[in-house]
Image 1 (cartoon, helix red, strand yellow):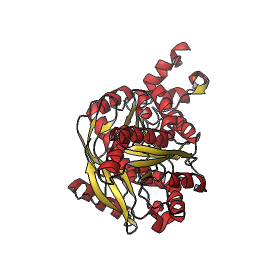
Image 2 (cartoon, protein in one colour):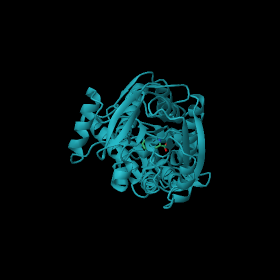
Image 3 (cartoon, protein in one colour):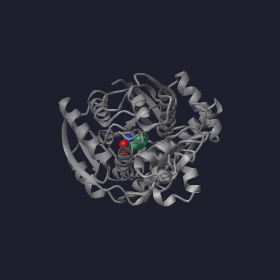
Image 4 (cartoon, helix red, strand yellow):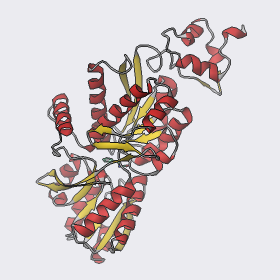
Amino acid sequence: MKNNLLSSQADVQRVAESKDGICALDQAIKRGLLLSLVIGGGILGLSGCGPGGGGDTILVGEFASLTGKEATFGISSHEGTLLAIEELNAAGGVLGKKLELKTEDDQSKAGEPANVVNKLISKDGVVAILGEVASSRSLEAAPICQQNGIPMISPASTNPKVTETGDFIFRVCFIDPFQGTVMANFATNTLKAKKVAVFTDVKSDYSKGLAKFFKEGFTKTGGQIVSELDFNGGDKDFKAQLTAIKSAAPDAVFVPGYYTDVALICIQAKQLGLDVPLIGGDGWESDTLVKIGGGAVEGHYFSTHYSSDAGSPKVTAFVAAYKKRYNGKLPDAMAALGYDSAMFLADAIKRAGSTEGAKMRDALAATKEFDAVTGKIAINGQRDAVKSAVILQVKGGAFKFVETVAP
Ligand code: PHE
């Protein structure tokens, strides 16, 4: 009897990873041995039998905020990711197999990323995870991917802590020490600001980190932070803080928030006569910023990852393909980064010649030059992408390219 049982986790994993087309695990179950797989309190995912390991497809997991407060982040990154998967499959797939994307909605809610990523790994048996945009949600999922030896690639989370989780965690975007410095230099050099107020969302790791790096950078250029105030993402009334900010008479206000809050902040700042440039980071980027904010967001600036009017052949081809696929919609930075995350994974799988976690991890880590839509990427020793940022200005209801800043 013992010989027929898969009696240790190692056995199960070996079976699950076998790629010879004969699914030993499946046969074991058919022989009625399912009970033997109950290890450590849970039934292990049947990854070898499903598309995740064996079969003729490679199952890739994605978690995104498809609904809820930051829905445009998730929808955009998902659309970009899916476009990349479709293009890869049209070109024959990877390692002779088609890629299959399994997407879960985390509803922009704390607690959900852990749920859905656990499910993707242990129930669906995905070989890698793509996601998330928001740093707080990536930070929730990263330890789960790390513990399971499943590579995770965040398209857009810029907080440094995300990849510090461990050696299976990567990103295709720059990080906030760089983004904060970019905007600090912009405030000093272009806006000629001497005094800046900083207004931070204390519920968001992204916002707290970016505020800190901006302050450090701005102070280094000789600037002065004249007011530091907080809000909670989801708040509707920012008038008390904005009144206090106005009385500090800043030359500009740095608001490292997400687009819904930022739009309301811009509206209320305008109502209060706080008539200075508001500046921020990539979290501003959504056409919903303009839909909610209207005239109140005009003229303000933010840093982000790419501009759809950058003009490079790679960007032009991507914008055309995306518009064709999604009824003329213009891809924003999250769409481009979602696309890049999937292409980056596929490239590493090809180089690894395998979908084993450790082999993919090593190939991802060894990426010295990857030609992404959002620019050329080198993966550094921290598993972060070293690449340029762009600064955009809201003008005529659209985002206009101002400048590119190299690392
Ligand atoms: N960088 C943001 C974060 O880490 C997310 C984001 C990326 C938002 C790109 C918009 C565009 O939370």
